[in-house]
Amino acid sequence: MHDFKRADHPSNGRRPSRKARAVAAGVARRLGLERNPLRRRSDHVEARARVAALLLCAVAVPLAVETGVLTQHRLSAAAAHEVATREHHSATVLDEPHLDAARSVVVTTARVAWTDEAGQPRQATVLAPAGTRRGDRMTVWSTRDGVLVPPPLSGRNVLALAGLAASGLLLGVIALSLVLLRTLRWLLDRGRYRDWEAEWAQLDTARRR
Image (tube, rainbow, N blue to C red; front, side):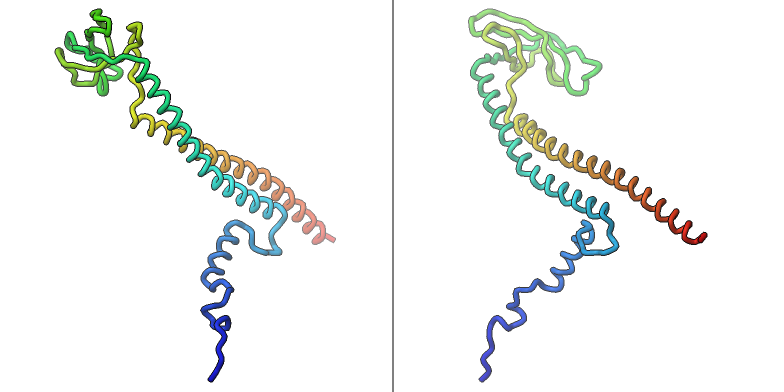
């Protein structure tokens, strides 16, 4: 009987497969990291800059997530504080709302009346959803002194603002990386053009001799 060692079996080798090597070579070629004697120093600098930009964007992903989480916690705490320190009242629309030409599709302005916690009647002109009619009921928010204030942030608004903060950070890093890469490419191209001109001048001088 033949004694076959498990490590000698082709499927148990530790070398990467041909397909994996081809993929790795393709990625290295696209990034400019393959060993090519024809590549100039400026090409290697540009290749390393691409890798640095990719790493920066990769690091920015968890930072953006952390920023979104921190923003959500901060805005949630602020909204909870506003709910605890403000009063909400059920107000009645007194007359037909006035259409705001600039925002008539979304909101209108309406005169409303309500009774505060102290039993005092109050009136004010507030923003109302489009389609509001006389006699409708709506909720208004005020401070303990009766000053009207915007409603606290809802949970949906908190999530939207947290997502905006996270995506803004990530997109900002990506945009900055692209600008830096484009600037570096422009500077390197200027040097390459100068080198080409010098090489053509030397070649032309050698031909004339």
